[in-house]
Image (cartoon, rainbow, N blue to C red):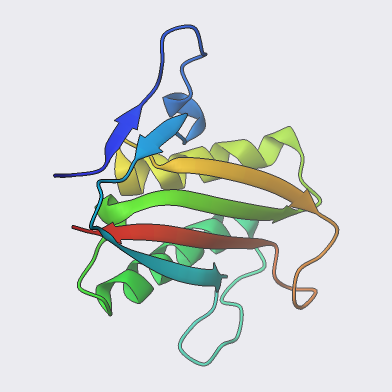
Length: 133
């Protein structure tokens, strides 16, 4: 049984913003936790100072981490997103990347604006929880 995304009547349509309101995980599933990923290349260096490119690279890195477990983006049930100096203009690139990765079935997501991340050049970081059925 797959995990079930539900966007209940009475809550706003969250999909255009890149998240779903709720998800249920079937019993007996294995959780795979992906630590905070950022826009690094294989050497660990940040690949770009551009926020939108950092978002895209970060989600690519989430995909690589999941593939190591035989999973893909469609197995993600929750994202925790950290944005340095968040402002509403940064929502567009995030929503576009989520749309690219998940289409009309995005996982649940919490976005946190933060003052800084591990190093000054990191502008965006994401943790993920995935489910192996």
